[in-house]
Amino acid sequence: MGQNDAATLAVIPARWASTRFPGKPLAELAGRPMIAHVIDRAAAARTIDEVVVATDDERIAKAAAAAGARAVMTGECASGTDRIAEAVAGREGWSLVINVQGDEPLLASANIDALVEGMRSATDVPIGTLCRPLPAARAEDPNAVKVVRRLDSRALYFSRSPIPYPRDAAAAARLWRLHLGIYAFRPAGLERFVALGPSALERAEGLEQLRALENGLEILVLDAPYDSWGVDTPEDLGRAEDLLRGIAG
Image 1 (cartoon, one colour):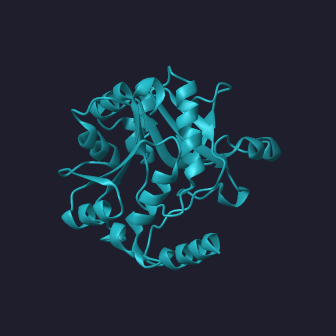
Image 2 (cartoon, one colour):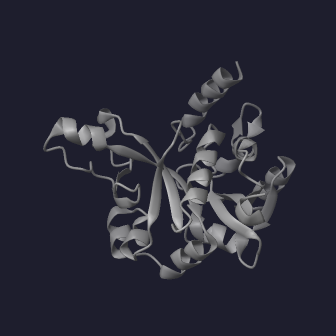
């Protein structure tokens, strides 16, 4: 079990509706639904005690159960974090919940372990996440979310713009970090986060994590051992299948 004999849960929010890719969790990838690959990756993390899929669709719940995860039905939710909060509402005996994105079938289990271990060491922080070095070619890409940290690895700010601004290009490039969309929440941190509602900075940048910073909730930002890559469109499936074959080979 996790710290103090309390469980560490990996919860995968998965909904059917998607503007760019309806039914994405059940898209076939290497002969299996994509959600099954995500479940496998989360279950392979040595720090995870249970994998849960939080969904609003019976088809996804059935596929999750077939892949070995516990499926929890939720209602309409404003965000994946709200869906996770609903899925664990009333449940006792857990110390950390890891928000695992349902569109990352290539997720490195070691990334989950790095996040969990970091949170177990920093017991005063309510929320944690991961980052990687940002390639200079993606500095201006608004879809590549950037983060800057304090010396103690707490987040200062997240942005779709390049931060810090490259007035000294070499110095800025050394500090550029790409935010990875995986989060760890302690019970009190998750409860407070969803109770706050969207903030002004969150709306301006379209980044949910800014809600935490704007309201004084610290976020621990740790270095991930491996890059992360998600499936956003049907066209991404082919690349994901090629990468999966490379891993299997």
